[in-house]
Length: 248
Image (cartoon, rainbow, N blue to C red; front, side, top):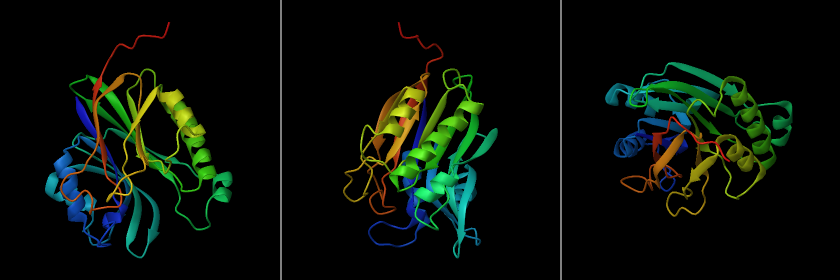
């Protein structure tokens, strides 16, 4: 069994005190003890003081960063953090002309980061995809359609274990793109994660392919979780079933 986590860290700026403090994020992740974590709204300052630098330098984690924009504070985007070696990775561009029209001008480009790991206990590869979809509903739908098309191109999700997770910016269910992803993966899990101080909206979700089974799914509410970001992290303990029975 392995533990996966998805966490919108809000640039390591507290949702209540508005203070930048990546060490609070590091403490939250240390408490969760996830094997693989997908992070959204990650800052990579040039002075190497960001959350990824802390996790690499002090916790020995492997990190993969996908920049979606640059501002005066440095790079900004999505990341994967893992205790397993990253064997292969892909940058999935979710932008199209239609998406650009649907979004607010000058808003962040949206991308997904995908990585392949080998899980020794399962004797199997695992693909993990992390993303952060747009605020605008029409743009979210177009981005999810692009993501589904790209996943079909390089993955057989019925045969290869795969997890899609991230901040989907969607709280209504069932909307079209969530139904589409459910059809592709078979199931998804979510918990109320936003706002962190008093969570009421399930913005952060995980989709598990049919060979994966969730044992535990929780929104983490421990030390610093309500102050480190404006989201709570969601985590799941999952196991692998190498044989999946086909529906009759």
